[in-house]
Length: 116
Image 1 (spheres, rainbow, N blue to C red):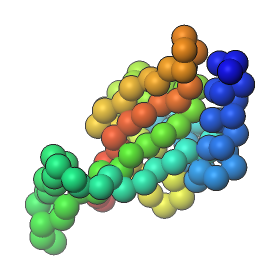
Image 2: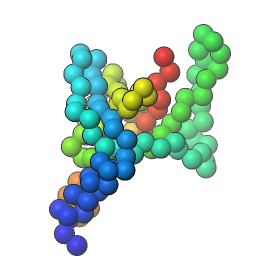
Image 3: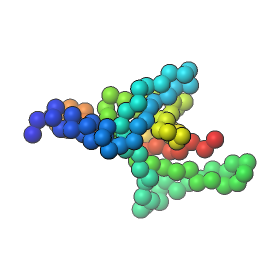
Image 4: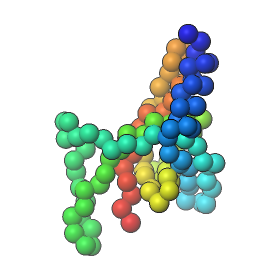
């Protein structure tokens, strides 16, 4: 199977079946919208079950699995950047580039919902 075709197919699936998102920086810059999958993490090992105290009480921060195209490299983002999808905002806790053969196929990340 050709690496280029697989990478193209993955991107096509994200665009067709994923939700639209964009990368945002504090200086006002925003990427164009692109297709991603952002799904709640299943807490099998409960390693992401922490929470934070807010002025109105205790709030568990939601952690999500992010799968997105390699062109939007979350690995290089600073801590101030966020991902916007509709009304939802997420910060990146961890991100890795996934390869198919020698070609980057997608970004895998753990993202956390922003509590404002």
